[in-house]
Amino acid sequence: MLDTALMIVSAILCVALILNLWRLLRGPDLSDRILALDTMYINSIALILLYGMYMRTSLYFEAALLIAMLGFVSTVALCKYLLRGDIIE
Image 1 (cartoon, rainbow, N blue to C red):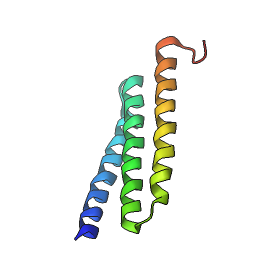
Image 2 (image 1 turned 90 degrees about the horizontal axis):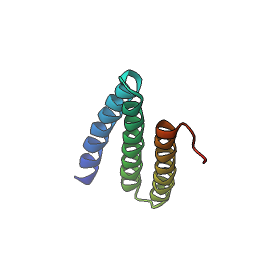
Image 3 (image 1 turned 90 degrees about the vertical axis):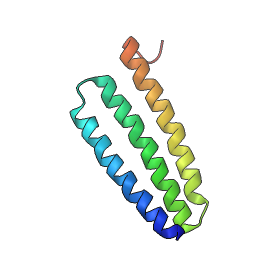
């Protein structure tokens, strides 16, 4: 039962990733593209966590944590560059 639910949620997250990719490529503004990239890494974290639950191992949870930290830092850096034009003051 749990395996079926994990497969259904994984399929839904893959559809969400495809829609995020569409927004990333066709976004009318740079801020929309940054938001789509931010949402893509959140969805990829969810997929990695689901895969870790499916495989019943904790190794994927640590990988998801690393991706979350890198994604947060990259989103902050991109937004700061968008606002000020320079990352390091």
